[in-house]
Image 1 (cartoon, rainbow, N blue to C red):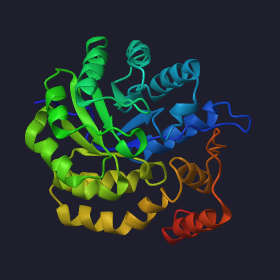
Image 2 (spheres, helix red, strand yellow; image 1 turned 90 degrees about the vertical axis):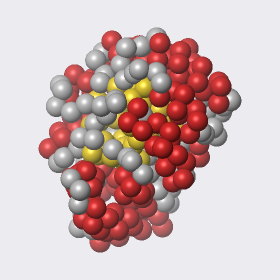
Image 3 (cartoon, rainbow, N blue to C red; image 1 turned 180 degrees about the vertical axis):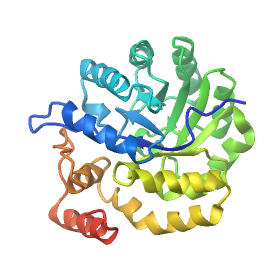
Length: 295
């Protein structure tokens, strides 16, 4: 049995930026404090929502180190260190380990893709070159490659392969992963609209975009299930489903960064090629947040 790095709701946190695109660490500190004070169970730094794909290597490493130092063990910090280049992923992961990350989040290789055997080799090499727990990140809609349940099972045999963030959207696949791996591979939902459904299939929580604007509510939704109160968890999922879907009316993290700004934080601009939403989507997002009493 592998104890999960966290249970509950981890925030896939945005990266606040100044107008010139530089990272706004002052606002980042305020936002992290807000998250921790409102129930967030872990912070996932420089993942997809944190615009990792447009951060330079030095920025990426500096952002992870700063976050680890600032959080200062209040909650686990999980560092996004995946790459489509195994060598780069190893280097990013080793630096994050050196800087004190509690775990690594490793997206599947994208664009060049690979076979299932290639995935096993890729992840095994990163595992063997590092000394912290690893969470696989399966998001085939972005990467073009899917971690099959049988592959997840093979990877679960590695001693520090702690879990998988499952964003395939395939609930049958998630159930199969749990059936094959049991407690040797913890499962977290990677889709906010499937939190309850993934928990029903053995999940330990969620790595959440929604938590950026609803940290306490997302935590409470998961905690209710973990405490055995399925009805409350399901009711909360139903209640927040519309808002969760609103975070994806455009490419992530475009909507959530706008939402964080609407909620009163200085999230700042996106880095190209991402651009802000059109007026119609902005109006819908604002109206939805008003409906939920967030603004």
